[in-house]
Length: 453
Image (tube, rainbow, N blue to C red):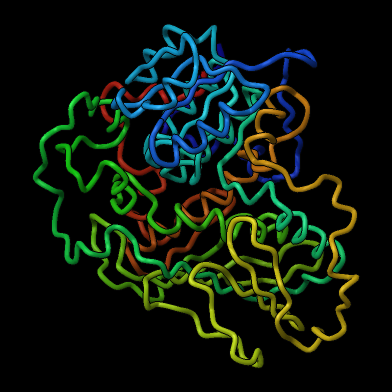
């Protein structure tokens, strides 16, 4: 048995796993060409149900287990397969059926991604984890280390990262269309579920528990609070204890290619330029967060990403682009001589201005040398579990991206300027912020998931 990893020392665990994101992770599959994988769906409603259905409908899967903290939420998924067992506790499911499960989808609240994924990976199960990868910087770090240790296929559910927009961005960087990027304005200006709550000064007193709810498992590693409709179902995203706010929801769909193909890694500074409604319980009503990235190799200059959320907190439209209006969700990429618009998910990029805009021909903008075509994100994951290909959003890639957002969440909560040392992976100028890289200590009985064994 390998040595265990203490929470206090986690930053030393997997430096090699997070320094470079280009290494290949091909699962050590024992499946044959005609084999199917046995599937467990963990989280059966809303987005969890959506990704579970996508996995269950894949020709190479056989559904064998469902798990939801309210068994009744398994609903139509339970009726879709024969001899499918239903659980309300993922621990019991793995205790009973570990030898019958090959892959699982994890579509649960942000704070619960980590313990489920760690348990599954330690048992040799391939995992598809809905975005964001995890709730805290530390949890992302440990999941990246686990991916490398257990050699299983691991996919984060930012679905656009298997689409043509990823291939397009990669090709444009290769061809020199995207180069010398100095600034990116990214925005998420749709309303959030916590916006109508107004000023929040504490946790809710509680509501009647839904019939059949396993609140112990729902709470997982997080602090225990009384059940409330402002947590479940769906409202957990706005609370610091459970969710990662707009960053966790939309960041992975908006900045995935910018982060990956511009080799951004981790920022050296994260700054809260604007906060409206800042408090220690829920995310702000609006925020502008700046991420400063150092110069990288291959002639990539230092650059800043500005993130704007809140229904009225929008970035200024780019100059010289006519009557262009900023999208409600998307980004504008500014280089020395081009201005490029990008959306979210699978939306392609479009040159909208800059001195070099008229020089870029339509032929140059076409996708060439793509290697692979756009595909289903879930199909990519199942193929990776079968050993046929690599996950497009493996944890070595999506973990670093998620860590950037985790630091941003800390800035939204505390405000000010945070200095981050990418080598030691510490926030050096704010003790409380540095503690929040780990987050709340796990509840008693849930500590085991923070150890690699």
